[in-house]
Length: 259
Length: 270
Image (cartoon, rainbow over all chains, first blue to last red; front, side):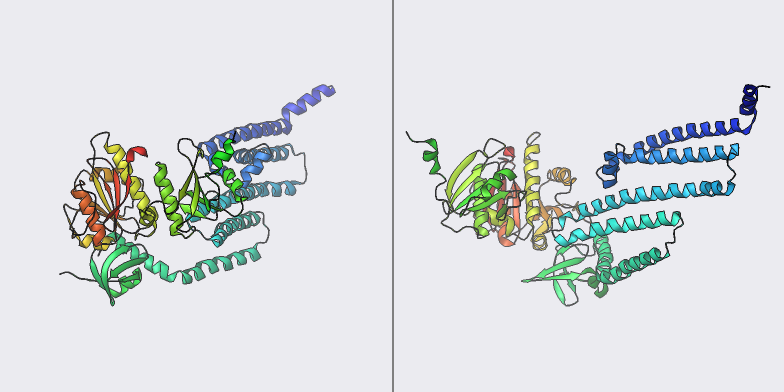
């Protein structure tokens, strides 16, 4: 038996064939899935959504796009899994445990990368959305809020990515908790009256127990209703306009004056 | 032979202020270097970031009313004084500034058109929206048959107490504001029936089909205008509201304040 024949036999019978097959199947699946992912992402309108964000600009600068990066990421993950499976099959490597740990680590890396990308895009989008909303507010300091939101989203994305990779994130988590507690609790404390007025205002606007033009009395203030909005009610009598918070209207009750 | 520049330069010689109507930023940039002459920008929004700015509530297509509004606005803001001589750069035919004129601030009696927007109870943006709706209605109405409409803006509580309903109020428990996209269509439909629209200071449409019952004495409006205009003039005298009327007969939009006719616009020009 010549070398040729033995080589041919080895190729056709051994695990090597199976391994090659697995590797090729991995390549095919990876390519198909990445094409599919690209199609699906484009169908969802991701390209338009991410347009103008820093991540998209960077991706464009590197000759690709956010959709491209994501589908490449998917393809790469599947290629590497295929390659690992093939190596496993061929038993070309003895360091069995090392590669299995890599194989379990791979999805985590994938999710971490996904979290980073999503965080970058979402953070910037959220900041843009909020700043659009706040455009009517002509106050220079208001520009802090979108930036704050952007970095909060970045922070959470980084936290998710790091915890996926198994990095100890306890300190960061505690910081996040403190931050959320500050925003929710202190914010709630600060906006307590506005929230109460808003809740009462919803009722007043939906049910209209009084409407513009009615004469009413709230507490000691009597007059004609000039305006009702979510937070306050304007009542006017001769020369005086009372602007009453809606929760006060609700708590004190309303006297409608008919004659 | 005299140079054209010498002859026409007289128009802008020794003026106290230059009024630029909706200048482009490069045009305005050149003017910033002009020393010891006040430069005032009059436009719908302050796109060039000018220091002295008068906001135009409408794009007045008629040049004289545009200039008039700009000057009254500058007087109202104390940017210029009564005797000031002003060079106005504005556009008449072109998209760019193509017209220069010289006016004296006291050349015409103030019409109060600036005060109509800034010194009324209702917000300027609300008044502008109502005027736009009326202009729109005037334009569209003429294709089919002309419609008339009467909008009473601001001081809604008092107006409601000086009027009575002609029919059920289609805007009850609704929270529609002028300027909402759907409003044009709604108002067009509801203007078929007679009666006034009542709009609050913040632009909420309080009611339609209101029959106004103000005391009509002392109302000074031009003879020949009908009952709708008389009612509009009278309600603005009796309350702090302003009224915007679209005439069914001549198709003009008129604004009243304090019982007087302040502004007259032809919807066809917009």
